[in-house]
Length: 84
Image 1 (cartoon, rainbow, N blue to C red):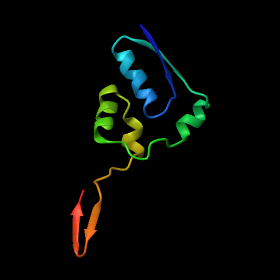
Image 2 (cartoon, rainbow, N blue to C red):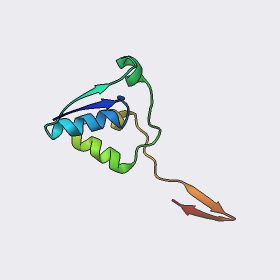
Image 3 (cartoon, rainbow, N blue to C red):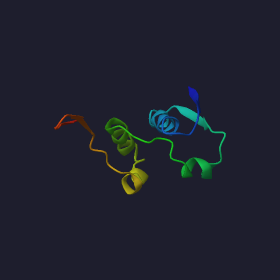
Image 4 (tube, rainbow, N blue to C red):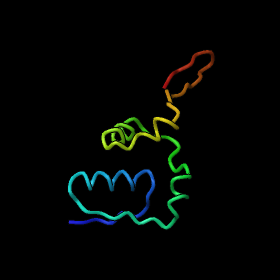
């Protein structure tokens, strides 16, 4: 079995790694150059489940060095702050 993935972004590359980890051959097709893909921020926020998956696949080095942890946000209702 083999697969073709369109786009080397924050969904396509991890999907390719997951498929390869399961023994499924795949190719990732990207129209931009490798330098463009690596230099562009394509995901503003990564959920913890995604970061955990990246850790499991050994793809978390750049996230750990360049990423900024997000602890949520506050909603204000009058004087009251509600942490989300």
